Length: 120
Image (cartoon, rainbow, N blue to C red; front, side, top):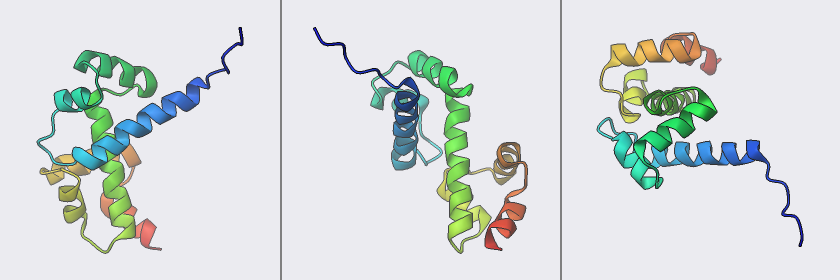
């Protein structure tokens, strides 16, 4: 019997997380999205998805989704000529104060400072 080729666990992990990010960007940028629906779309129970994401990222499902949304805002404000508020709303953030705090936590700078740096 032939031995199966070795599985690159890091690559599988990256593919799994990329699949989730793509799904979030495709279907779950609206603020009304549900973690239960995300888990269902991935054929996981919510608790199984929570454990898997926590194991790979050290983030909860909600933190991971927020992180993906914030990265999307960063991409939008760096590449497009739109306001930070418009970018935040497009990524599903309805509370700009909350968005700003989460952005600073993730990037270590305010959205407006980030935008200035990216426009240089």
